[in-house]
Length: 330
Image (cartoon, rainbow, N blue to C red; front, side):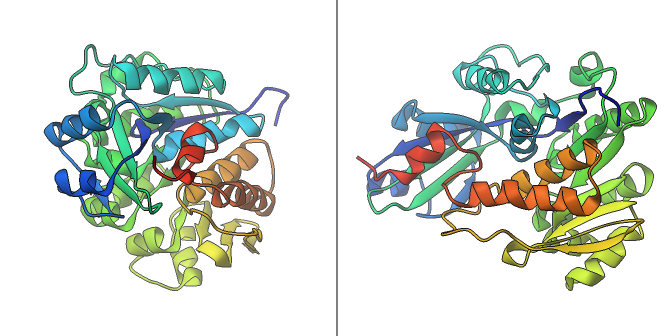
C-alpha cells in the first residue's frame, strides 16, 4: 500500500429504513403478517407510508450499509445506487454525506417511483414487521454511473440483489469493466440464497470473468456451490476466486487466499439483540482490511469486530432508527 487512502466503491440498491410505532390493527389493515418481511408494490408502499407518517429514518441497503461502516476504518467510500428527488432520497444523501461517503448518482426527478424504503412497524409487544418497496433503486442504469464512477479506486463491491433489477446486469458489467480498467479488485456478495436461485447462471458467469473476492454466508455461497459444509463451500470458492470469506453466524468465519485458510472465531457479545446487517458490517471490515493491506486473517478479525458491534442493537447500523426499534410503541 502507498500513503494514499484506500478507496472502496459499492454498487447496490439504495433504501431508507423508516421506523414507526403502530397499533396491531395497522398490520392487518395493510395485509401484512406480524413479524414478517414483505416486498410490496408502489400502491401498497404509498398507502402504508401515508398512514404511518415520517417515522424515524436511516439510510440502508446491504452494500450501502457496508460502505457506511467504512467511516470507522479510515477507508474512503463511494456508493453507487439510485434514489429519488424526494424527502427519503434527501435523507439517504445527507446521511451518507455526514459519514464522508460520496453518493454521486443523480436522483430520479420527482416523487415517482420514490426512493426505496423498508418500513419497520413496531407494535406495543415489541414485534417488528417489515414492508419493503424498492422504488427508484431498480431504475439504476449504466448511463447513471458512467460519469460518476471514480477514476481511481481499489475495490468494487457488488450486491447480488442488483441482478433482480431490469438493467442490473448491464450496470454490474459496466462497473466491473471500469474496475478492471483501473486495476481495482472486484468483490461480490451473493446477497441471499433466493437471489442466487433467481440469478445463478449470471452470478457464476460474473465470478468466472470478473470476481477476485467472494464474501457471504455459508448458505448463500453454498447455494452457488451446490454444497452445504463450510469447508466444501470454501473449496469451491477458492476454485473460482483468489480470495474468499465464508461466514457461519456464531461459528465465526472461514477466510482464505493463496497463502492458506484460517478460521476466525466470532466475537462474544453479552446478548445478540438483532442479527440484521451483521453480514454487511463483516463485509465492510473484511474488505476495508484488505484494502489497507491487512492479511486475510487480520481482515477477517476486523470483519468479526464490526459484526459484533451490530449484533448488540436493533438494525443494520447504529443511530436513531436502531434506537427507535428498541423502544416500545406509543
